[in-house]
Length: 376
Image (cartoon, rainbow, N blue to C red; front, top):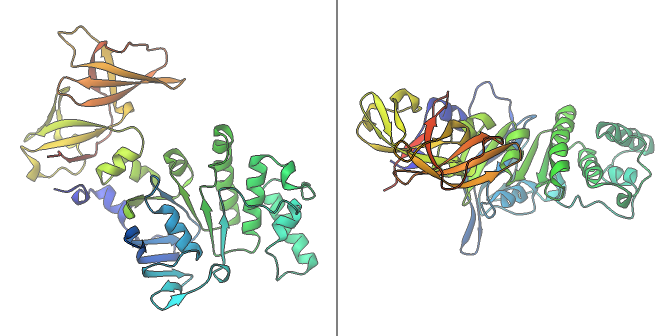
């Protein structure tokens, strides 16, 4: 059985785009493909962007997420498929609406502020249909929204990275776009500011009631700020759903490995149990396991917080520590089990064990686990 064939009740909910309770779609992609010569960057992509949501396209470099964003913006034309915005087709076999005519706002990685203009002038740049009084009122409103009142006369080079990002966001919001696109918006910020600004950007977007699509390769960023996450790999949509569903019930081995630190525990499915080299467990531990898998080998997804390693003598141990990662608050110990599986165990920073130390690994998870047909 292929990874993509594995579905559970939760994963079906995550994948579904036809939820009757979901808000209306602002933008839709249907069968969108983008080729560059013999290379295919995006493959048969179909996804809806719902009114008022922040949808994040997540994946490694080269997966097609930035190309998708550029097609949404009108900076690239699909080779196949259609894109609709507010029920109007903006890209298709016989349709192509230019970027400046789509009513789409864009925040670039480098903020792209005009250095010769003040903050106020940058924000007002796109307000071509407003008179002077309307422009002043709108700019004041947006500077308040991004928590920069009284800073309109400054130039961009007098601002911090976070302040520049706020100005870029305010400028993109000024014309009240149908949808806002954010291209790796936090990549040029330091780690501390990145965490602070991603929460602030979410607040601003929600307060403004704006529909937005963001692109990132940062899993923590995507999971922490998004209403839904769409995971892409090799130009294909692997899974889409709310962050909890995608993280806790990944539908493919790729999604499981890409989101967080994943380990895979080899297991044989019995009639009532799932048997591993660290113990036997009730088969209800595995989410959505059917009777047809009795007797089969599967790989069980275990994350560091699902396991615990305890020092043991060699006679009683079922593994040994082969690597340790110190993160400050915690250690993540990589343990090679007796059967060759390598898993990760999360421990408090005070629980200090050495590489090479024999341990007994126990499953401490209190939730059901995702699983995949064993490779080979």
